[in-house]
Each structure stands twice: as structure tokens, then as C-alpha cells.
Image 1 (cartoon, rainbow, N blue to C red):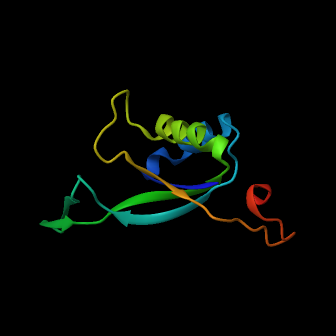
Image 2: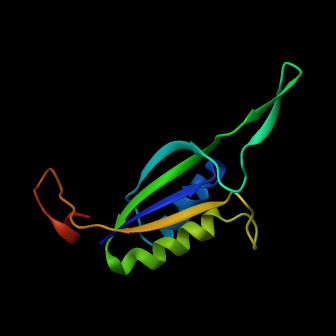
Length: 115
């Protein structure tokens, strides 16, 4: 079992969800987050003054999957989240973490059956 954490552009959320549906991944958690990487923020004009905005709005997806769904899930996120064929700085990151256990609260099921 793995926990996949993806940071993507908010505008790409619907495309990523559609791509995940195509590979039969239907369960995910979505969080609004802020951060920056290579983009290093941006500047905006507010009331005639230039202001540096260091944190950019992003969307974080958390998806718990069994091992056989890791690659299809990652490929779907890349397909839906990439800008154009080559991608652009700011398209996001994907992290894959080992997951020791999963427990369904309603039934008490554990492990891969609980996902």
C-alpha cells in the first residue's frame, strides 16, 4: 500500500480527477494549500504598489492505493496535471510514501481491503 501526495495547479484539478476516473481511482482527498518551488512566488500590483506574493495557491491530493494502482495513478496525475506536452514550471510534484496500515472505521477492516 502507498500514499500518493500530489501538489498541482488548482486549474488542473478537474482534468486530474477525470484522468483518475479513467484508471478507476475514485477515492481521494483534496486540500487547498499554499507554497512555492522554482516559481518563487510572483509580484502583483495592489493600489498602484508592487507587492511580492511569496506563497502561491496550490491543490494537494492525497490518494491511498494498493501497489498495483501506483503507476496508473501517477500516470493519470501527470496526464491531467501537465501543462502542454512538455509541461511548465509550477505544474507540481508527486510524492509516493509507504503506508503501513489502513483501517476502515465503519467495519474495522485493515490493510488493502480497507482502501
